Amino acid sequence: MLESQRVELLNTMGLKTFQPRFQLSAAKPSAALVLVKDEGAEDNAIEVAPTAAAQSSAQVSAQGGVQNSGTLVEKAAAMLQQQQMQDVTTQIAAGTKNSTASATDKKTTTTVTVNADKPLRFRQRLFRCGEFLMILPQPALQWQDERKAKAFFDDIYFALNKQRPEFYATDVFEWPPAKSFPLAHDISAARATFAGFLQPKINNPACTLIICWGEAAAKNFLDEKFERGKITHFQSRPVLFADELQAYFLQPRCKKLLWQDLQQLKASLASN
Image 1 (cartoon, rainbow, N blue to C red):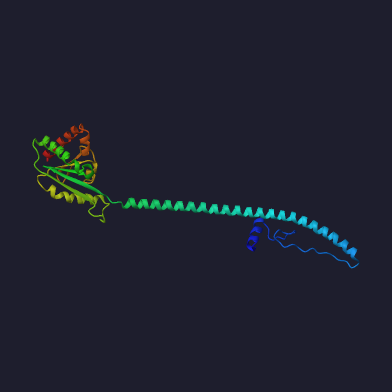
Image 2 (tube, rainbow, N blue to C red; image 1 turned 135 degrees about the vertical axis):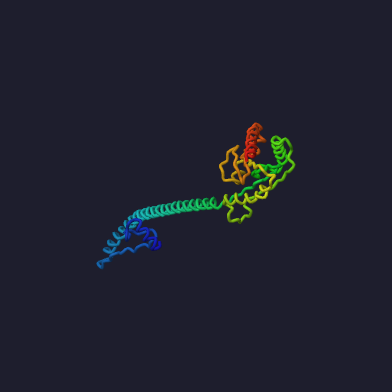
């Protein structure tokens, strides 16, 4: 046994020193001391015989002592191993708790950072139908619905003016204009840029009415609360907030409400 192991076992048993009283199993056998007298061989035999008997008794006692000492050593080793396992388990649990807390903090920080720097991304589709300028969010009007939407707008125009429109035009506005645009997350900058994009179209005297189809189209255009049927103004042009275009395709009864809103829009234009 190494000295460091011996000292560690003694500390575990609460002992400072250990002096065996019997022969240990791994130790060399001790030499028996025999007293020899000069008076004669018989006396020598008498002295030797008890010594041999004592040696035999000592060996038996030594074997019992070895078993007892071995049991103590095994118990001490088991106690030491159990204590070491508990220490290791405590360290692992503490390390896992710290790692989990650290990972949670990092995850929370990352989430906040991503949400704070997340840019706005949207597309506004412009559809010019006579004097009407339609503003729609791009996902609301897929390109395959082009003919259906055009026929719907044509019916609206005919219901109001008793004639078919002679001018159609489409355009798309995309925000942000570039991936690295510094104001990509600023809705005010997006609205101002969109207003500048609309300016040449609004300056045309033939464009007199604006309809925003859906809340997204209105939100990306004007800083006003969305309400279906609400009429506001942008640069002296009346603007009507209508439901999403798909709602009128799927629910024909909504066309009645739209007709009432268009009548109010036309009256607003006449009052100006």
